[in-house]
Structures are given as C-alpha cells and as structure tokens.
Image 1 (tube, rainbow, N blue to C red):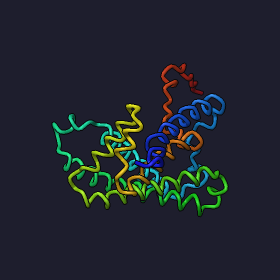
Image 2: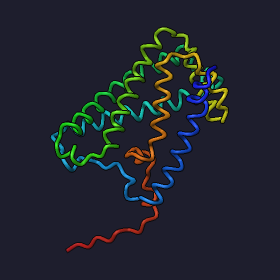
Image 3: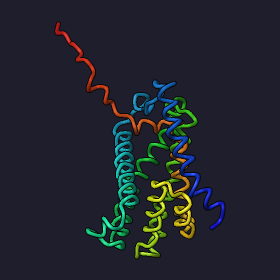
Length: 227
C-alpha cells in the first residue's frame, strides 16, 4: 500500500472532518448572519423552472445522502438478515441511478440559471459557483461508479467501500486505507471529492444543511392585533 493512498484515504478524511467541525464552529460564532443558503429566488424566479430545478436537486441529493449513510455504515451482519450483498448492490445501483439523474437534472438547471441570468450571476460569489461545479463533478463521478459496478455484481467492492467508511468512523485510518487501496480509480476520485466537499463545507452556502430553527420552539408568541 502506497504512502499516497494512506494519506488520501487514511489521514485526509480526518483532516477534512476536523476543518469542517472547527470551521463551522468559528463561522457560526463569528459570522452567524452568513449562516444561510443565500437563496436567489427573490432576484429572478422565471415561472416554475426554478421551483422544479430546486425540487429535483433537493429530493435527489437527500435520498442520495441517506442511501450513502445507510449503505456504507450498516454492517454486513445486520443487513444480511434482510438482503444479500449482491442484491444490496443492485438496489444501490438502481436507486442511486434514479435519484442521481433527478439530482443531475436539477443541478444543471440551477447552474445554468446562475451562470446565464445577469441578476443572479451578479449576486453570486465565487464560492457559490465553485460549490455548484464541485457538486456537479461529484455527481458525475457517482453516476460513473454505477457503470463501473456492472463489472462486479457480487457486491465485493461495495463491501470494501463500506469497510473503509466504517473503519474511518471507528478511527482506524490505516486499516481503512488498506480496504480502498485496490478499488477502481473512479471510486477513489468519488471518495476524494466527497472528502473535499466536507473540507470546504464551512466556507460555502452548504452550511444551511445542518441548520434547524429549533430556537423557534422556545420563542415567545408574536402578538398580532386586528384593526
């Protein structure tokens, strides 16, 4: 196993997570008013196109994230009571392909709007454009893994990737790097870009993902008087 593989897939994930946690903490503490999605809907909302694009993107990305979380972090001893490894891979390929295409269509529509609409482009920061392009790259890589997965339908590579993810969570970085050492380059690029997205997370509009207005539950009622 090469030192580069160990660095990228055994050490880099912890660097990315550390920067993400510390960066989010500092941003929320020092710049709380920047902690939002910076929606551009008020600038230009042409008919139903923006709503369709936004819904396609968000529905797709939510199911993709849930699928990755459950698929990668569920141990074999648990899901083998319900489904075989090969069928689990087939389910991941079909569902991931479906929601991945939905997400891709919505993302392309949103990116086209942000780059071609003068008002939206003028109010977009470099990080806005960067994160959309990075999302596009990651999504394309994810769809490409489906094609690569057709060459090994026994689920063996999916098990390797799951072992990598579970080892990372258990702080077994060197063992994790070994699991992913021999997989196809497309999987490695997909994992690397995913870790990079976690690293840049605190510096982009993506922070709104982990925002929940829980303080509204304890907020005093607003008194609205009739004329």
